[in-house]
Amino acid sequence: MKIQTYSNHIRFYPWHHFVYYPVLIAFLAGSIYFACTTNDQLIWIFISVCFIFLFCLAFMLRQHYALILQNRIVRLELRYRYFTLTGKRLEEFEYKLNDDQIFALRFAPDDEILDLIDDTIKNNLSGNAIKKAIVHWKADYNRV
Image (cartoon, rainbow, N blue to C red):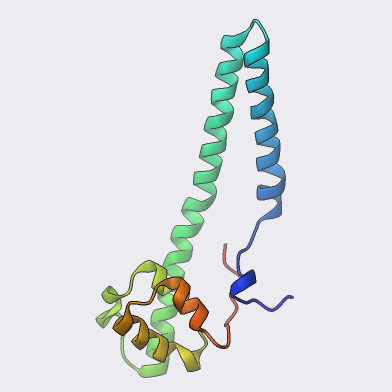
């Protein structure tokens, strides 16, 4: 497995990104074409609207449930790691960290995370800045 870094941490699901969406876009383009070139415009406009609806619905649903669950798990992981390293609860000051910061901190290894948390709270680092500050990237190959 390829070593995960900042530059390659984005993940694609091939069947969804490279099969389902291109086929749906092709059908949508075809239905729009027929809506513009045939006498049965009303039915082809309706079919086009259905494809647009399917596209939007698929995009929203594929991410919604998985991302909500993933976000909860990342928060729990960070709380557990912080408690394991310090014996203190992260919840005491977790409200000072936004989602972007919490999600970026998951890539930090145990020997860097405490300093990064302190630096993030003091300097209000963005998630992108946190990721760039990580020296030894802790890969997350199991996320959605």
